[in-house]
Length: 359
Image 1 (cartoon, rainbow, N blue to C red):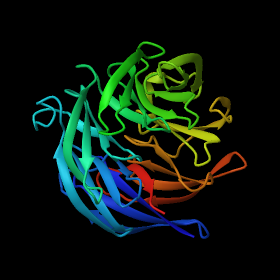
Image 2: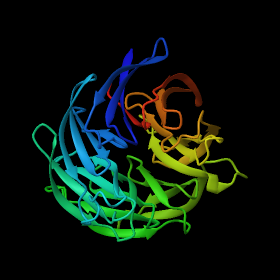
Image 3: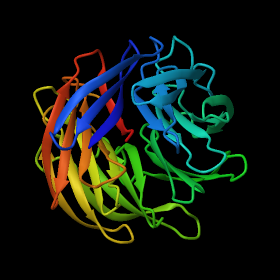
């Protein structure tokens, strides 16, 4: 069977790459390079709930694209970063870093800026076809915040945000009618200077997994049933092997598998002479981590990326991207072992941000 994935770039010129994975011949090939606005490379992309639209964090903009087919992607709209007046200025280093699409009506899109002037999250409405329509809310974090990842609970009532620069985890409640967010509270990182970068939540709503970039670990939280705030369990798992210099590594992303029985996390190296790492965890029925299955090196440092993307139809297939060499790989996860089965090098500038599975 053939599967198609879309991938963006860290740097201009903007492009969306469609690659095809054949799960019988175990091969990857480039199908289409779609040119998009030059100064709007997509460092993080996601589909809407129908996979008819792609939303992108695109330097100084948040963007949307209509997906006609795996090889026909059409730019719809781009909106500047909202919140602080300096965030969208060409004189600041602020850039859009993450975007999350609601799967429940009104299907708003939630975006995060990063670096300086990143103390606001942006909320966008969509039109009938799913394209970005307007900025309807700029909700506050704190002036020193820089959010890198967010996740909704299964009901899409509560939103959890990982604040790298503020060293916090934030909780917001979503209005079911408007999609606007109101603050519930924030919690300092489990250890000062850990820098929460990414969050994932179990469908049970009982466990939140927080990836710490500087701490290079995965911290486990439970969700308080009354306040809906995370509570640290004092359980952490390493994302780089013991004994290594932690300043040479940065943990990256964490995602559940299709069945939610497994959890995958990655880290990157700060030198091209070193490798990043990938970890897998066995997950219990309510979301507790039963054990860490392995911690193994990735082929490259990962560069800015080393982003793992489990397929949304099976636990068997995962994609891994890197912008160290500029490549995408497919891994097979079987009987709790992980094996690389295909790699495609694409030496375009900045290639290798996250991959999203189209089919």
